[in-house]
Image 1 (tube, rainbow, N blue to C red):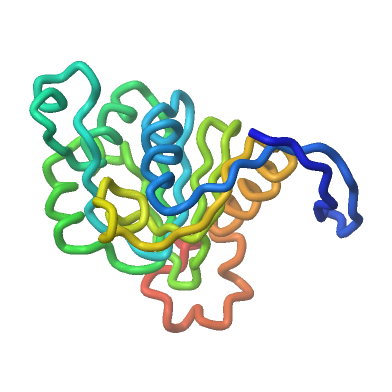
Image 2 (image 1 turned 90 degrees about the horizontal axis):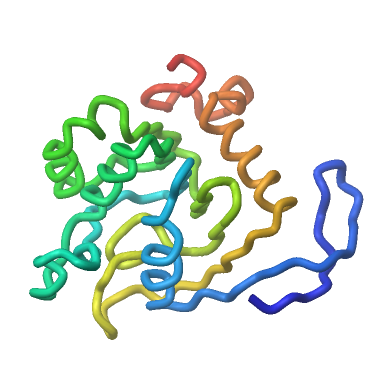
Amino acid sequence: MPSRRAPLPRIDGARESRLTSVRLVLDADHYARVVQDVLVCARVSLWIGTANVKEMMIEAPVGTSARARGRYVSVLSRLDELAGRGVELRLLHATVPSGPFRQELRRFPRLVRGGLAMRRCPRVHLKVIAVDGTMLYLGSANFTGAGLGAKGDGRRNFELGVLTDDDVLLDAVQGRYERIWSGAECGACKLRSACPKPLDRI
């Protein structure tokens, strides 16, 4: 990744200038760089934030007969493998997941029983993927096939984002994610009365 000195906001509101590593991610690179190179390689934790959740197809794992035949599998199958290896999986989302996603999820009892922790906040519009506390995606892509999946050229969304291993950005983003996830923002939320299940009640 190229390095560039840029002013970045700090948590206390002051500003600092330092070197950081950032890679621009465009369109189909979301699948190649974010999903294949980062997301499915998680070893410790995978935190996903998205407005929409839909079924997403990815290439079958390398070395399998399905891959040799050019087949695609649900991303949930790969998340199930990660859960089996003890990776902490979180999915923070705004809308009810699509019917095909919910139907596919039922095929993976380990994910349903808590291997994939899911929490819904209608105000969530952020799109973020944090892997192992060491790699961060921030951008426009939702956790959907059109955003991150293996859709062909001319069918996927136009998306823009960045990948970085910057520890300050990781800390700030994960801190914000944790506040929403834990319900720390619920008490002051002015949409609480319309919320289907405030997170501070979980």
